[in-house]
Amino acid sequence: MTTLSRTTSGESDFGEAGAPAGLLPGLVYVARVGPPHPVFGSPAFEPESWWDHQARLGARFRGGAWLHQAVAEAQITGYGGGHFPAASKWRWALAQRGPVTVVANAAESEPLSAKDATLLRLRPHVVLDGLVSVAETLGAVRAILWLHGTDAVTHRIVLTAIEERRQLGLDEIAVRVMVAPDSYLSGQSSAIAQGINGAPAVPSFRGFTIDDAGDEPITVVHNVETLARVAQLAHETGSSGAGQAAAPRTTLLTVLTPIDRRVVELPRDLTLRQALVAATGQTPSGSAGVLLGGFGGMWARWDDIADLQIDERSFRAAGLSLGAGIVAPLWGAACGIAETAAILDYLAGASAGQCGPCLFGLPALAASVAKLRVGAGRRGELRRLPGHVAAVDGRGACHHPDGAARLVRSAVDTFRDDVSAHSSGHPCRQARLVTFPVPED
Amino acid sequence: MASSEHLSDARLRVNPIACEAVGLCSHLAPELVALDTWGYPVLSDQTLTEGEERMARRAVRSCPHRALALIQDGRPAR
Image 1 (cartoon, chains in turn purple, orange):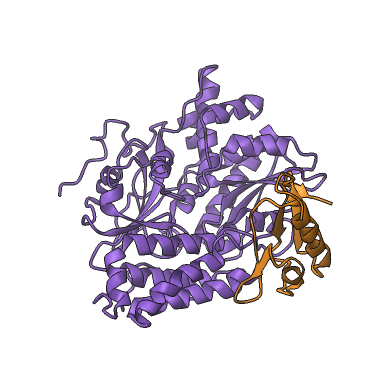
Image 2: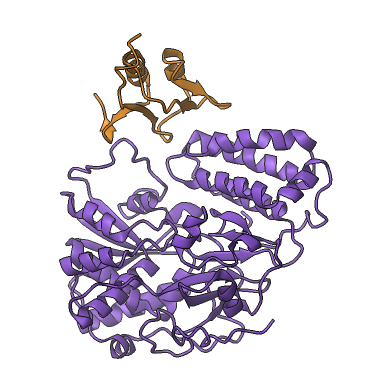
């Protein structure tokens, strides 16, 4: 298969630093596990200084009602995986009485994802511009960057960028960096709301009071790519004057390959097939499973998704989601049930242990899938599985157990033939092997 | 029991963090609250008749961890 040159899409040239439409200067190769360390012959990317940033984009426009309107018109949604409309979050926050804190969420606790740290490492000022502009729009009293727990390199780059801005006296509001605990749920927005106020950063339950927070402090959490999109939009709308704000033309993806992860920015009207060719030079085989959205995401068959556009709307229309833009194909003859079992073990261990159904139900679900993996239990296990899924689905304070339930349901659908072979005592030959980089804990 | 014409749009909801699987709710409102393998409540999501709403209020008042609420229009009903 020939490699699609990144310029043949005709949309924009991603190789050129300075293309104003792009968030990233180009394709970034990232180590297979852990926080992003650009490796394997990447161009020598460096964090963009404020001077370069300003030369590329021009001055930042102060946030305000105009930005709220532009974000609503451009229909910017959350790039952390939830895809909730940003403007709706702002409308809610503006209707509350309590003091507002805006948080840039760079916890990126999903182990397969690398786009957020990559973005912060290469273009820290785009994210900071977005954060400050949102803080201005919402009249926030605090602006916080919530950073991945073990990523010292990004931490240093971000502190340097904030110091540049402080010395130049750019912002009225000082961005404060807080380091998240290194746990899967530390990027969950209610966990962040607790963490920034001095409580343990674990999810909280908000189901009894949804609409009106009274005088309580208000926390508005946005993924760092979302903030970068807001900054990009502010530059485009602010410099062109009035007119309809356009939706972002590109999206960031993290693609898992057998040797590394690749963070790539691509036009949203490319198909997933074109995107994988652009990012990796190859595509999986037709019946291969592809994990979308990471460990809290879902499986799909490559044949069914190859021709979808890499836009959340086209995936939603097919009943799927790209989550935080993660695409992890099974490249070889790997066993999807084995991968799912390993991921479930990880998800069960990542529970905050606050809710009974998650605390007890996830290990039971993981144990059930582990039996299926090795072909134990025969038909009985497959009969019990739906009960284990129902026991966790929708029953926690956060969506952690729901994600595990969805993962298992999608695995049973996607690997139907393997599931029936496993459950009649004939597991795949590869069932002992796990090819995904699932952290051990 | 009231006729089905008097349906309330209130729903029982549990705060799963506060819930400690005591199980009084299921004793007091067995038609609305089942218990899972570990003793945690599984709530009916159906609209409540007047009689069921009274039953639900009893269950809400009985919870020693205040983990249960009757939610109406997005907030706990008194």
